[in-house]
Image (cartoon, rainbow, N blue to C red; front, side):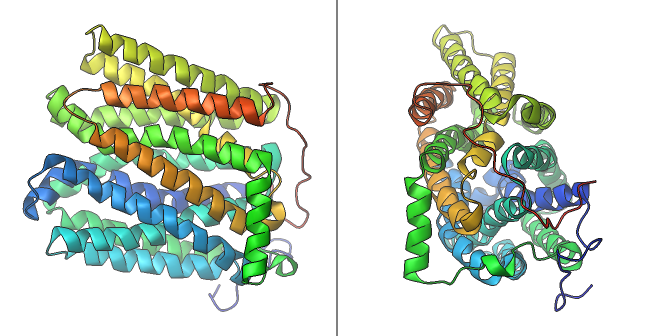
Length: 425
């Protein structure tokens, strides 16, 4: 099937089957996750090779990428709503590959950061398109299930990525990691070109104009659930970014267990994967609010327990790994559900809405995560405080959004859009 003649979602039998759809959406998400997690073991080697001597500066390799990822989301939504999902996907994955190969040949830290910034901007399309394409086809609890299954497959990436990065470092310098990123993005591009139909109904295309974008932005920001759950995602995401920014340093400097980092990181990420699997099985039965609100309370309690353990002087590699795994489990039950709830009323402006929501949650989360990471001074306390504080702030936000009543059923259940591009079997 050629790029010039994409399959039509209106013709029966030409859409993706359900699990292939989930796999492709997960692969799109994985492009971004690989861009962060695969290089964690290589951060010391990269900064040493490029002449960077302040250890905390290695976090900028992650932070700059995340910043580009956050800002660029503002643009992809309107473009995807105007030109369709496929064209934007092809352009973004091609740019991601080019910047990956550019980073592989960076001769200075500044050039590497510039390539990482643009690479992150290209990766922003994956977040917007995953949400938009899924929302084109599903809504409500069904959308939450699709996102959970995609999230589950996607979570195999942080479980495996540091080990993959470590394996690449055994046979290649750090440049080989960027070659692997470029090749994977080209693989996703080819898969989408051959198999993904255009999911945006031509009648739903929106013009790119200040008036149209302003109207969509107003709808997104004035909707209580859209704005509230977007901010909720931001603060929980901030804790996750704080962990990613400082994880390598924590294992190497606090616990003197640099060799254990890939294994422990994988185990912690596996807890988040288990949560995503559980969520995909229970969310349609119990609802997004019951599941995510319960998990949020658990996230706050775990954070407070972790702070207490550190304050009492009982923190060890084992306690850190166990408590961080519990934290990631609770996080896994909130993230995809909060995202689905934020999109409940946004079906007609899915691309632009996901852009605005993604910009707010990613930039806020990146800033919070950078503050947590830069606060690292040889202790796990900043990370534990970041998760606990972020969870408590999020709980206050959710209480405000839900008018003080947690665990309520969905405020309404949008009907699944007719004419889905994806077969339901």
